[in-house]
Image (cartoon, rainbow, N blue to C red; front, side, top):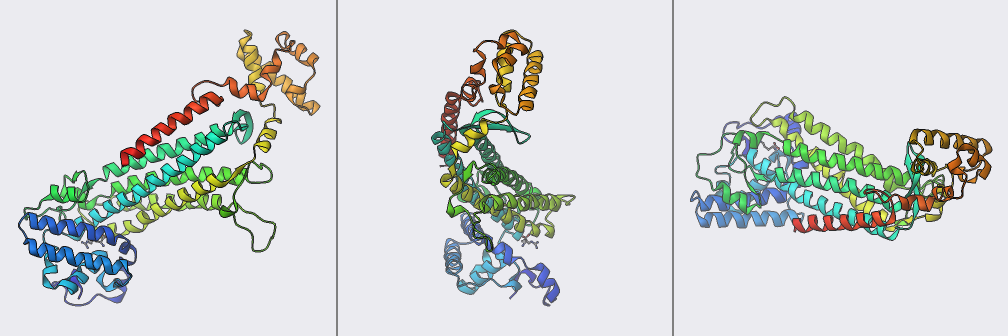
Length: 465
Ligand code: ARG
């Protein structure tokens, strides 16, 4: 039986068309949402007096049985039944008989699939938000534990100024914070129920749209049937938030790859998140970070696919929209495993405070502090910058650090540098603690930032319930 063809097309599909037409291998993933939506629709039909309570009960009971069969792996979806919707409905009719055919009253697969998608995004979206919260929790915990670990801050990937590891970890955390907010925002906008929109122009049945929306946990029903069935901007928005989150995770991945090289040596990943080589016995590779980095490429592809799918699409459902499933499923698959793996890797890695400290000792990292010292003495900053720049050049020529230049060289460069007072400016630890400005790396400032972030994360996760 191919319900989708009904009485209009009694002849079967061409095999080539069937191959193109079928989507159940992909949208079968939506079976939980499809059944949940159908149960709410059946109950709504009964409330509106369109079917009897007994009929609704039979349908709801039958749908429960179908769900059980799928759960236990007993029901194999049939490609000739096109999609998940037809597979579920056909099985329902097989199980409970003709009354099952009443389920599709006042409904089209167009409002059905739009509902399934939104429910799916909500479920996976909640999982993703929870994983983001876990990753943020790991970052905050490590930032707290590593509060006394100093390291360089980089620009152009060159050592720039003295900073602390916690400050760097908190920079990562800021990205996760914004990704969480963007995804939440996208999920909020998707939180409307299309059921009752029919194929495109609603329904003549007195459907209880508000009740169905409420039962499915949506904030409200959608407002326009043409829009609700034929627009997927909610998916684009969510995929966009996910693609950006993946890009952010790729940046963290990139730094873990760099930091775990023997050249940097800032981090040692735990065995549970490292792999070896099939050929080189000595190898310990940071695959977790590389896989996260690589998966961002796929995430970007999902966003591009969805944007292209929507481009120039005339209003009212078009079958093109069937192609939205794979990128949508993939968008979540590009982020969720990465969040969890990174959280695990970061919770179990060893940060090498000694190597980070060593990195602070080379590269004249306190040059800005020395210029600032002169500026505090009333020297115009531009002039101070010039004086210190020349001193760095001199140190480079001698193959030593700025701080190791002889007293006489400092005195000759500027009278304000003649005294021992300059030593404090050239001390990396003091240089970090001097940066108490809001958003800076001083210990007290970072501790306050961690406390503030902890409170904000607690509030958002509590708000999700
Ligand atoms: N599998 C279809 C999709 O994902 C369901 C809707 C089909 N609607 C239709 N008019 N053929 O878009």
